[in-house]
Structure formats: structure tokens, C-alpha cells
Length: 300
Ligand SMILES: NC(=O)c1ccc[n+]([C@@H]2O[C@H](COP(=O)([O-])OP(=O)(O)OC[C@H]3O[C@@H](n4cnc5c(N)ncnc54)[C@H](O)[C@@H]3O)[C@@H](O)[C@H]2O)c1
Figure (cartoon, rainbow, N blue to C red):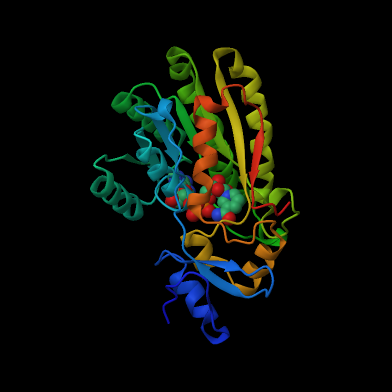
């Protein structure tokens, strides 16, 4: 079955198949009917329609920009006319994304293959972004690894590896771009954290510890870099259904239960993060710093 009509009810025997197969393949997206509690499909424009004039030509660096939320951010900034460089460890999806964006918008984002655990490689990639596009004035620390882990299984190596992806790069990317931002007269750093650490998520303590740490890092850097007009904020998404979430963790029951607790009864997708990040990147938010914006459809 292909659910192609706005508000066509999903038959119960099709629900699992349609959820998994259609969530990313087609425009229609699932929505929980607030009255009847069943899954329905709706069509909408995904990317925000707002234009932020100051982002045109801006030099933007995104970590983990090759898939998931990061890919939506890469596209979202290209749509604004920004010069985007993105770091990602996964070459296949990253190259495909750069190809697609170039074809669709006539502007190719610069893909920099990098493992963020390697700080020298990270520094070299930040320098390449600045060489290509001028001093980076917008940095988005988006990459993460949300592997589930049981308390009893965590080793020192696992813990350190987890922090080396989920927390450590956020500091070193900021350190790498801050002098250029200062030269340029200011900048915006946006760190992705997660509501998972606020809801006592039980299955990934190393990840939630890193995500809580990101808030401390955000506020510490905002205090230090504010006098140079560098703003530092965090974005905390709720449950956003990316390719990885869909493959690894989504079940219809869990998703429906989650969405039922949101004020807005819609499944969040990567594009839903873009508007908030554009706003934080642009001078529309020029006095907003040291804050965490929760984008969770009103779950919390
Ligand atoms: N999806 C959600 O429900 C959700 C919820 C809360 C917070 N977040 C946060 O939003 C951000 C994006 O999440 P997502 O769901 O799109 O993640 P994702 O796992 O789908 O994508 C992460 C990207 O980072 C890249 N990456 C991972 N390790 C890397 C490394 N060592 N070096 C370079 N690149 C690496 C991956 O290749 C991938 O492209 C993350 O910070 C995540 O913690 C997501």
C-alpha cells in the first residue's frame, strides 16, 4: 500500500510496513490523530520557508553533516546561500548528499572526510573549511553516536570512545574556529545536545553524560567568547526520526506512545531542526547566547 493522500487512515495490518517503508521514501508523513488515536498520513513542506539574509555567503562548518539531522542542516544552509563545509566519517552517504545538493541547488557543499576522534584531523578539516570559504562564522557541532549500552557492559575503552565522539570534539572544533570568528567580528556556535538526559533515559548513560556536559561546555564557552561577539547555544531535540533511528530503534508502538506525549502530535523529522538552527546562526538571535533551546514538539 502507498499512502499518498493527505489524511488517509492507515489500515492496522499495513501500519508497520508503511511506517518503516514510507517514512522517508515519500512526502506523506505519519501523524497521530488527536481524537481517534490512529496513525494518519499528511503531506507538508519540510524545510522552513524563512530567509536569513545574513547567512547568504556565510562560511558554515557542520560536523556529522552527511546523514540524519546533519544532512538536513547541510541542505538547509545551502538553501540560504551559505558556503557549507561538513565533516563526516561516513564517505558513502556524505558524497551522495553533496552530489544531490549540487544537482538540486547548483552549489556543492564541501565534504571533509574526518573522524572527529582524531583531534589533529579535526583541526586540519576546520582549517580547510576556512581556506575554502573564509573564516568560519557558523559552527554546528552535530555529530554523535547514540549506541545503547548496559551499565554492566561498559569498559573504560567504551566510555572514552563514547566521550571522544559525543563531547570532546565540541570543545576542539570551537577552539579551532574561535580565532577566525573573532577576526570576522563574531560568530555563532551551536551544539547539539539531547532531551534524553532530561528524561532519565536508561539505556545510554555515557551518551547522556556527554549530552549533559555539552550544556556546561556551551555555557562556559559562551561566557569566555561572548566579549568577542561569539555566541554559543545548544539545541536539544526530542525524538527525531532519522534513517538511523528508523533502522535501529523505532517501533510503531514506541513512536506512537512518544508522539502521544508531545503537545504537537506529529513525528519529528530532521528538517524540523533546521529553522531553529538557522535562527540561532543568524543575527536574528544576536543577543541570544548561553541558552539551550528544546525542540521536542512539547514532549517535556
Ligand atoms: N535523532 C534523534 O532523535 C536525536 C534526539 C536527540 C538528540 N539528537 C542529537 O542530534 C544530533 C544529530 O543526531 P542524528 O540522529 O542525526 O545522528 P545520526 O547518528 O543519524 O548521524 C550522526 C552523523 O555523525 C556522523 N559521525 C558519527 N561519528 C562520527 C565521527 N567519529 N567522526 C565524524 N562523523 C561522525 C555519522 O556518520 C552521521 O552522519 C546528535 O548530536 C544527536 O545526539 C538526535
